Image 1 (spheres, rainbow, N blue to C red):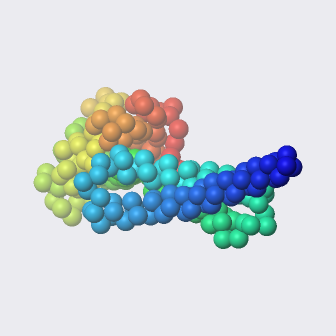
Image 2 (cartoon, rainbow, N blue to C red):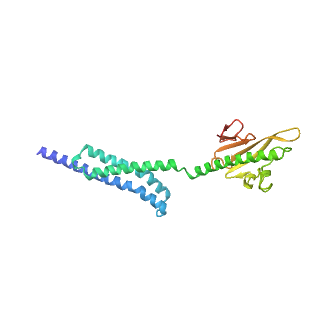
Length: 242
């Protein structure tokens, strides 16, 4: 009689374990299906009534939950009811695989698509470097065309409104004004000769708002070499761009 009770209790536990495993496998698949649905809702605008923070939380957490539930179900299968696994094992494996796949895709998206402000700052920095090279080119040709003056004393002298458009030292007016694409450009002259001719100059390019419109600071001089520094104005000892 006692043996029958223990055998019935064991059968009950196995049945209970199997049911829990099946529920975990089913729930793993359901949770794994949430991130794609949320992503579609964000793209199409269907999920607008739902706060964006909730959507982001679901996209981040659901793959982890799906993978966890799938692993738990598979562990239960290995431990107890292998002979009765059937579709439940397949569901658990599918939920686990989907969870890991969604995590991989999420990491891939984060790695390949930088945040908008980072992307904007990178574009601003590239524009600043290009602008400095244009200014160095213009300053060199201005100095050649004005041997008695030397290099220009003001960026406005290089503006296309101040000179003929076809002159080699003409740059666009926005750049000559000193501010362009989130960077402020400052011309500093030095090394006047006895006759007043300017022999040396430095043009600084600094973010209008640090860490918002740019991170790096740049500098170019009469050598044409562009140098950069992080979080502080560049100088002649700063690292050169190649």
